[in-house]
Length: 413
Ligand code: ADP
Ligand code: MG
Image 1: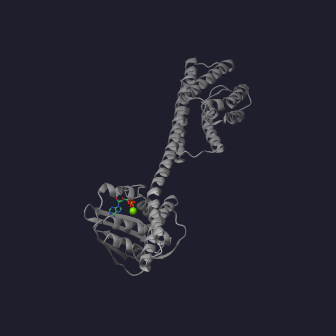
Image 2 (image 1 turned 90 degrees about the vertical axis):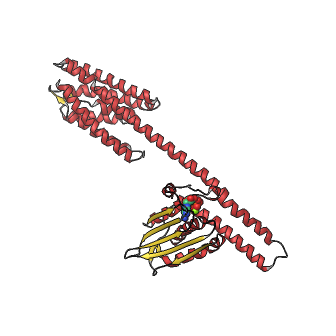
Image 3 (image 1 turned 30 degrees about the horizontal axis):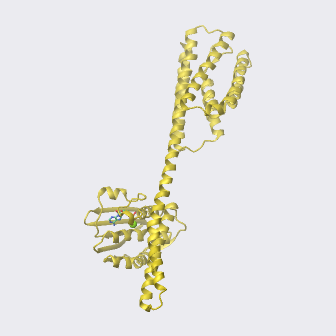
């Protein structure tokens, strides 16, 4: 059973290469592989067959070259190229009768593969699999006939078994793997598509709530401003309400922009204490409305690298959540502490707190427990900004007691 043994060895080699190529394709995550690399890859498969072919007679080399050629030709449309390559490589082994038959066989195969490839892809996966198998059997029967003409094998059973069973096994397995991988890639793509659609839907819903509400309110107060007998005090009050509403709409838009493009636009030096104080100032009116008292306890001034506007946005989102977690008022403590290389910013509230599951889901897009009042984007934006600043976030929370967020950012060198 010399030939069979040889072929089994050949097949295991192909399988090992196939195994690594599957990992490679998975890593590329469905990105297209160029024809050039495909060709090189199949050339390597071909070479691994030819180098280890079974050689008994002067001009007969027996191996599984039909497998890479059929797979490459049917599935990837590089059949003609591979056929020419196999003819050239076989030429190096000697220009004999075997070479002539090989040339004859693979030249005609090149033509068939070239014609067959587009039609092949139009078939259903199951039919493609069957077709590959049948093409393999046909090609190997032809090869056996050629061998019988040139130099009949001593052990017919061995040769027939080797040529009919092993290549079919190999082709069946490889074609199955190719189908499996391409189906997976297709499914993944569909999933991404659905998710994108879902994101757009969510965005529409959030825009109608989060942006239309403040705009409607602002329009209402603009109409009130148009009345003639308004006292200056009233006028001032309306203007500040309008401003607040517009700012809140602007923040939602800002969150969406950061959500779709989370990288930092510019890198600048940020004075942490100064910026935190600014954020507190911006949020004072909201805090007052909720009877939340903000207490700051800031260490010596220190600097980090980042985008100042995003830094603002990040801490506005966190502190706003703290304020909203205390419908009946409470305290928010903002503290900073520095070490040699980092600064830690702690924001602690006495609000409703979160369950373990809620803490785990923080930062997930559209995760909100506030119904139509929330966008579920705030924390997601916070996480992406802190990640871009190469910082870390720690959360401790207990339901009914409150929440503590700790941000650790590397200091400017
Ligand atoms: P939104 O505020 O629009 O709901 P966020 O992404 O800002 O979305 O927050 C997501 C969820 O995380 C909130 O709905 C809330 O359940 C929870 N959460 C965030 N911060 C706090 C906090 N300080 N206290 C209690 N729950 C919080
Ligand atoms: Mg929020």
